[in-house]
Image (cartoon, rainbow, N blue to C red; front, side, top):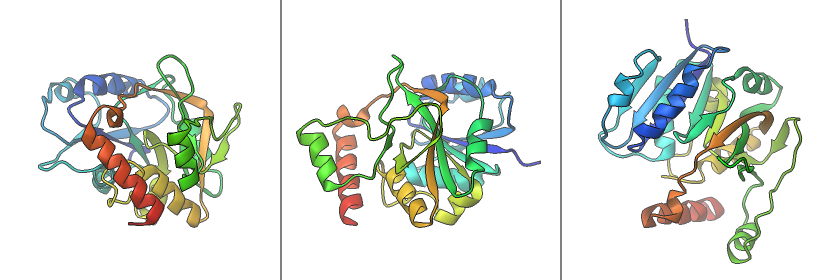
Length: 240
């Protein structure tokens, strides 16, 4: 019997924090699931051996791949009715997936995500309007960072959600062609939500389900991540 949900997690030498996420997934009782773990750079696999009680399939890359290529490769192995792109630095506050799956059952919904907060409890800026040259200049030059959306406990339709936690019906992910692998890192989430919108499908946030994002902010610390971010921004805005 096929699992209901396939979780795709990519590790860049992040075994320590993935252990915490695996502990959270171990508590899931409302769905059947599988975990597809992609090891993008060589690392100790002790944490995988210690989690043999979980339904984990490991994909080891011979060459480092980008965000979209890794999740697309995982999807090719996935058997679940729903596909979840999940960051290793996410923590599940409540171990449940059914509310998100129910939200996907509403006609015209292509992807759904939970409310995302920081470890201190602040709301993360994870649901936004599609970026434009004007909005990006305001953000960079004038540090304009007010949230694009406000909500209570009702689900809300947004332009796009961050790729840290995205759940798709597997048939929809296949229909839209998965993530665009021309983006090595960053903007894959914006791009796929834009393409879903062009298919007449909505991007939805469900605030009644909350996760914690223990962000590493690599683009603020490493030059290559910043370069990838800039390249992806230019590709999205100008179609290069």
